[in-house]
Image (cartoon, rainbow, N blue to C red):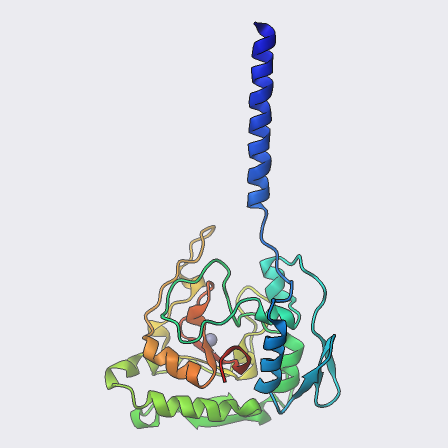
Length: 271
Ligand SMILES: [Zn+2]
């Protein structure tokens, strides 16, 4: 009798330990850093997106027109999500495909297409705002001129100023009840790092604009400590689609959302 009970106890113990081991495997954090399956497509788009700066790529590196080379991969495939943001390589910029044109909806966990930027490439193209001489690339453009939206300062590199003017012209034609989402705007150029991060915001390259913060939602503003971001959005899709047409991505498509934020990222959008 005692032997049977002992055997039953051993069986139960084995089952409990197996379940514990399985749950630990399930709970293991996802890792990042492996190149996407369609890396070549992304690299081709990257080269076409920035013709003033990038001449092409070989098996290992992106090749700039001035001969500078950037390794495409750092070979790490075990990055945490924070490391992906802080220490990305070139292929990490494509870890999530940007869903251009899609109906706005809550993104899957850590789905942040475009939030990862390989900083040396962006500094090579736009300059380093923490150094002198950066402002020579800035130009003032009219924001919603038909609705007296004032002027914004934006980079001339990669024709971002012209792309923003085209956005502004089209937004200006939207029904006037939508203008409140867009003006006053909440800023373009701002030499800063992202909150809680050492990585630079696209505002540091003068390649981003925040629309009216009164109607914006930002994951850090609404998150309680220890909880996950809960996606919210008030920005109408008509506005998003005009920006995307001119190859600005929208922060409302991120799990770590920033719905007032648009930045010029032609490598992530259809030509
Ligand atoms: Zn922003």
